[in-house]
Length: 397
Image 1 (cartoon, rainbow, N blue to C red):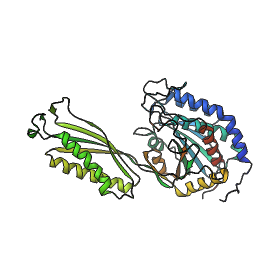
Image 2 (image 1 turned 180 degrees about the vertical axis):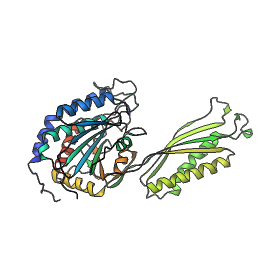
Image 3 (image 1 turned 90 degrees about the vertical axis):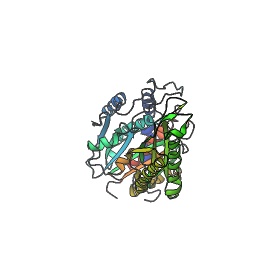
C-alpha cells in the first residue's frame, strides 16, 4: 500500500473525534483499574468493569479463563481481527504517591496493564460508534494472568478464544522507547520464559574445618560462574541469550557449612533451538562442576512460554497502514527485548503482531514500585488501533 492512498480518506478525522470523545472515559477507567489492582485469575473487579462497559456499548461478550472477557463484533465479514489486552497486576507495594494509587496492599499495576485494558475498552467504544465502517469482524480479548504461569493466554486458547480469528494484534507500553513511538518488529520480538531450580547437596560440617566437608556453598558459587560461560563460550554472540541466577539460599548459621544449597533463576532466548541447547549445556555443566567438588546437583527446568513471534505479512501491513495514516513520523527503530510475554501462545496459533508503544522513561522501567504511565498515551493508542482495525482489508492478504 502506498502512502496517501487510503481507501477511507475521511475516516481518520472521524476516528480522531470519537477517540477524543472517549478520552476522559479511558483515563477514568485506567485510574480505576490502577486503584484496585488484582493479581492473575483474581481480576474480579476489573472483569466486572470491563463487562459493564461492553454491555453499555451494546457489545456482546463471553467469560473465559475464569476472569477473562471476550467481546464480539460480528459483521458477517470474511475476516476476523482480534485485539488483546492483559488485565493483571503484580505483587509489588506501590510508592508512586498518586491520588489513585493502589488501595490493595502489596499489589500494584507496575507494568501498565491498567492502561492496556483501558485502551482496549476505548477501542471497543470507538469501533462500536463507527461499526458501519468495519470491513472485518472484531474480537476484543481481555486476558487475565499474563504475569505468572500458568498464564491466561493458554487457558483462553483451550477454551476457544481464537476460534474463527484470522489475525491477532497485541501491544505493550515500553518506557525504553520515546513517547508515542511505535516499533513493528518482525520475527521474535520477545524472549522465551523459562525457569530453573538447582539443588546442590554436599556434606555439612563446622566452618572451622571445611576440609572435613563437601561444601555445597563453594560448589554453588562455581556453578553460578560456570553457567555464565554457556552464553559467553557455548552460544554464538549473534544469538541473544540470558542465564540469570536470581536467588540462592542455604545454611542457618555463620559457622556451619550446610548440606544443601538451593539456586533459582531464569533463561531467556529468542530462538527455540538455542533454548534447547542451553538446557542441555546447563545439565552437563552443573553435573560436571558438582562432581568436581564431591557434591551432587539436580536441576529441574520448567518452560513457560516460547518466544513471541510477529508474522511478517501482518506486521508489514500494519506498519504500512500506520505510515499511510500518520506519515511514518511515529515509527521507531528498535529491537527485540529479553522479557517474556504469554502473547507468544497466541502468536504460535494464528498470524499475530505484538506492537511496542513508547511511553518515555519518566517513571522508570516496568515492574518497579514507582512505575506509572503518562496518560496522554492512552487516547493516542486508542486512536492508533481503532484506525488500524477500521482500515484493515476485507480479504486475506
